[in-house]
Length: 370
Image (tube, rainbow, N blue to C red; front, side, top):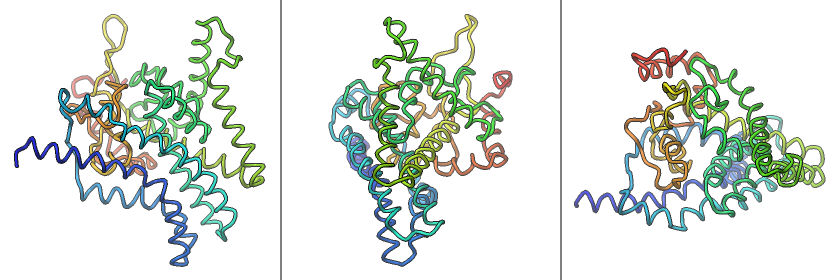
């Protein structure tokens, strides 16, 4: 079999492997089934976290890495237009909405103990964090349907500011001191998170206010898209309160917090210690694949719609997930995102693993780390 034929077969198989990205939407129903079948409801409530932080990293190690890049001239143009890939991301929106309501109903109707309640809400928040990843793909696209779908997903986890700040702020200032979502060298996760929470909201509001000012409109007008998205979040909070009482309100708030915290942890590891060099004219160099950490493990890549090919995404933000490329020049994480998230939760361990990699990247240019 020629290399060209083998390449086409692998690319076709990989297309359908992206169906794995719908698996998170099934993990809570499967956990409930397992709890009823085997009689350990509280233990199975943690099933989503066990899969994400246990099973997937193990399978990453077994299945290995994925260096398959589509041909830019022959394959990319047609792949960009295939509806299959777009349908997978759009399908997440209604399915996630149904799951969110159903999971709250299950929480209040099943005999969970305290450990089970915590596990169930954490698991729903984990799925919400994965939903933010889907929203991330959608808000980078030009179509109104994808833009609105991404905004609705973010509203369901009360983090609508990400829609504005990520595209107009983070992608402009990534890997510079001006970016609140790019972690500094030696900065711990717990130093990073409060700053990221605060500036996601503040920067989004400033960016939207500046956009409206250029159009001669008030930030407090209905032309402010943040008012609409946060209004939807408020309406959902009221809806959960009316449908499920105070427990429903707490559930909605806590699962949102878990979801957007997962997002910010991922932001932490994606750019840790990396800096765009400042040029003689005072500007920063163009964002290139070298300014984001990559992780090219196959299973996590298809599970996360190629989020781990983050370098190519930042260099070419409009590229759809299915045609994002692996770059050998990009700095590489030693494991998939799930493993790196666990490392980040323990700052001494994180620094032991990551600081030598950052120092090696800036060998001879250590002043860049100041």
